[in-house]
Image (cartoon, rainbow, N blue to C red; front, top):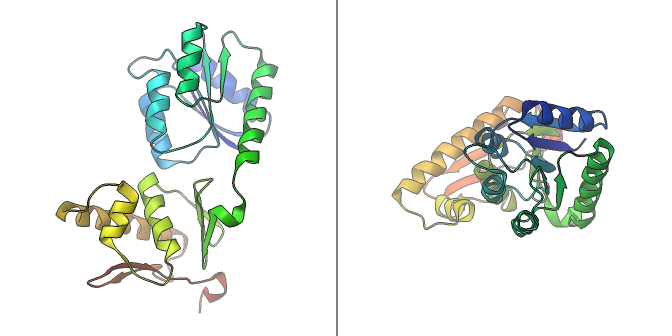
Length: 236
């Protein structure tokens, strides 16, 4: 079931789009402000986003630019603005489609389905993007992680740290490597505490699904290690 984020400050339009796509079997989250949308993008994963352009505070173009730091989901702009320059700006920001208001419901649904199919075709092979570390599986392309086949709700930084740990499963990864890999910035004294906080949150989220063992261990003086427990080990 594809997950769709719809952002429009006009509640009636956001709710209408959500209703149309939900009727097609999609999991749709309507949202009425760009700032709220950013919060959702930091904490959840979406397969496609639909953004209005003219919104108070942060417009759709700014929202699209901000989301690209945390998600590569396809974007469709839905807007009353139909100037050629708006189309150019939208596509330059990485949007996949641009639909003008008023829109025809069946056409919008068809375009959403087309963009979802296109995104699916361009995904890499699962063997290239899926990391299996015992009972934990990380799909770097879809930006999804599971424990014992149950979904983990992770922030982008938590997801990056878990990916780095899974890539070196059963071997310690230094806090320096985790920070520089997840943040892309030089490691310093404050970074150690940042990693510690994120590791604690990861442990809490893993523990909420399986409290029978500690999946992330501290390798004293070295860093952190992800253990490759499997579903067959559960309860052992």
